[in-house]
Length: 85
Image 1 (cartoon, rainbow, N blue to C red):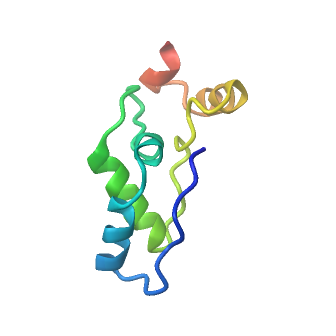
Image 2: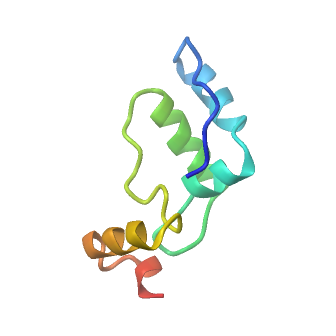
Image 3: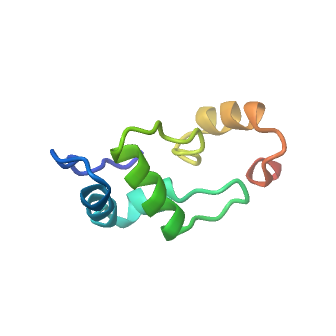
């Protein structure tokens, strides 16, 4: 999993949106993972901003980081297209 920069002290929607936009390409790719197998910058920005505001990270974050993670994810999400590969 790529590292994220430190979160802002003031965790407001505008500051969290700015923080999310400042993450590197690896983090954007990881946080933008979709069940279909692709990655979306817009999805990544939304997920990161919500995470900054206190929401938990979606389970798919980290898919492709290890065979064990992928196997466990696919056992819990058998219908996800990314797991049919």
